[in-house]
Image 1 (cartoon, one colour):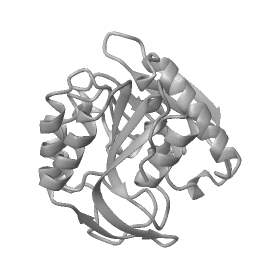
Image 2 (cartoon, one colour; image 1 turned 180 degrees about the horizontal axis):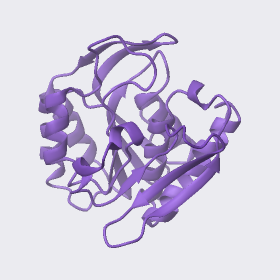
Image 3 (tube, rainbow, N blue to C red; image 1 turned 120 degrees about the horizontal axis):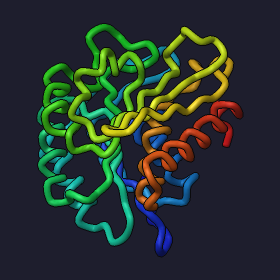
Length: 247
């Protein structure tokens, strides 16, 4: 699944869930990196069983194994890079990821705070358990350069008060049947709104959150500003959604 970047290209390192059956998670992260000409280094935090009927099983890996693979990936970076964090499973993995990041304070980090599958999931199955989310609030949200919650994950916003920047995605907002509004919040700045027409049957597209956060990370690795990275990433994902993910 790894892809070696060409000379001078940026690299996306991703720690997330393995989703061979449904194509989200690390599979989507790798697809985005390839589309944007970036190298790709995956670190599997958990394995999943997913398909057309939804998420049926989650198996987190040993935190020490995740940490060792992430440490090796970060140590081998020789050019511009960014880290995308997706489904992390539990508190032990969250803490281990945070521990490895201490030595890389300038590495751009984009965190997709995914806790539950957007589509169907069997009762009691989570991509990040309750203790893991609390660890994430303490150790990773303050470190991330951008956190990308959907409206359900964002809630009243209080849990995100320590974040450097937040992109609240609006695809789950059914108050406007015609338009989707994503809002970029950066402390000390007025919120920026990004709008696009709502795509018919968009709920059938699996992995849009994974694709968006990975694309933003790729653009940040290239040195783009946060607003420009968000805008370019949204354009890619919208294009894929409108063409049925055929590209």
